[in-house]
Image (cartoon, rainbow, N blue to C red; front, side, top):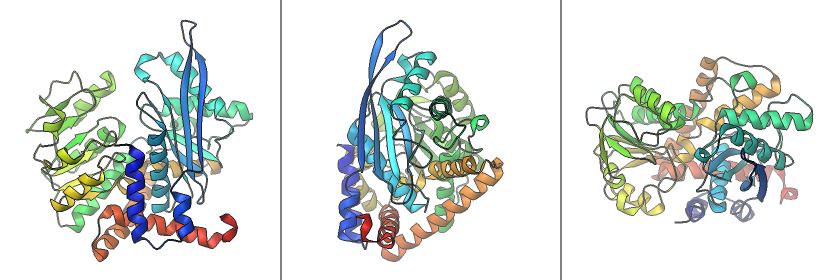
Length: 413
């Protein structure tokens, strides 16, 4: 399905349950700005290539737009719109002074040299320099991008403004104004939610099994943290292949392999299975940590787990959601589970503004406290109202946005 259909339907469901002003519903249904730019870049061989690029700015009532940049051959406008909407909801849920945005370039990163990738990144920044900024719109890494790309863009932006201001981008290297703990932040937040859920349900994680789809930054860091809790990874998959090993994977070796080879295609530590068979694996916890819409009706009907933790954005559609509810499979939703990244991006932004930097232990302690407090609020509403944690997260987020709009007065509409 079109991803924006899913995002809109989820929003509609939550709006029916939340106490919202009618005008607020209208505002949130569509993004403030949809920007598309085709820009030229010279390749190493002298050829000029044109790149389609995006920046969707959904809402900024709470503060500057905030959201990742993804470099992917599969991106399209409605996908970017969906991710921008979800970012608005994440920042509101976590009570951060940010709005929601998302952007990217339609390209296959593997087809370009590092020098070409640098020119592409810097050119994107130059073309979008009027739309971004520390108090306007703050991009961050996402699928296909990393701290190196944020470094290039931040450097370009600073040169355009003739000033050493680091806060226009987050996810940078620590040496260039990045925050300690940013690399593992999203995975850390995922595991924090899982620990809180387990505590609420008197559910021991020691010796429990899990499968994880996606083994990039989020998936790999999540797995390393779960190993420290005594959990066993019996299934792992990415866009190249899916593997199962009932004795458990050595996730440390797997991460080393992915760092070197960029994917798991040549990893030999398990038995290869089809994507559909992967999602049938019996396990305790399922963690989708890659792309959107990977679990639809057919796969949802064959899931064999106790809990799904959405480390990825939008991995289940509405039909899969309903099937999981009928099957008593609880879901920790994306706008809660994977919000650790934007929380630490907020801490990076604050540190950049203050020129005052903290050790990793302090950052992760603040992250854990915020994630745990928000989980507590979501879980409480979920149980009191007998609704899913997804709907509880949406309601909390929407009612916070609604309150801010009302407090600002009629002049905002």
